[in-house]
Figure (cartoon, rainbow, N blue to C red):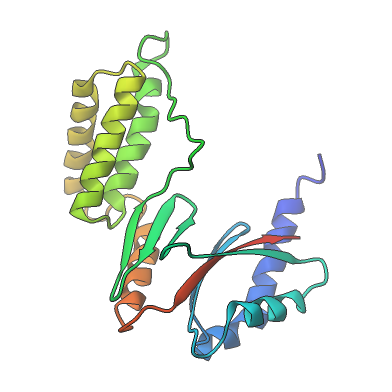
Length: 209
């Protein structure tokens, strides 16, 4: 199973590498935007100053045991964690990403579980829908997806509608929204995108140590 501190040591190493080797790439504007979650890295780079091959060669020379798997955008789209990011001429469009293998199975409403357990997944879905800066169309589509998931798991639509109203009522009473740090990061990404007449290329990098 490995050491229980291995993940902590790996995170320390990655942060050290980022602080030492990534700073000048960002300051030189070769890399316009950099974000990492565990071993998934999202990068927007300026194709007039660098290329994905140059970035990979540079990273490969940093540590001999660090290997990168790079996936570039396909049809102006790329997924990062649970986000689907679409590159348009003057902006980025954010949507919810679901893998093709997603089953959308939650605790059935007919099961002998407390109601809070049955609603837990939908509470998470609704909070994510509300907290991300989705367009009105994407938010509407996501809401229909949530209702469809509820239907497939025998959950009455009125339960989900009531839950959404409760969440949004509580959210409106708060001075800050739930999970403000993540929304700030996504908004920062969108702000960077608006500075360019044509958006730079972006890629997702998965690192293996």
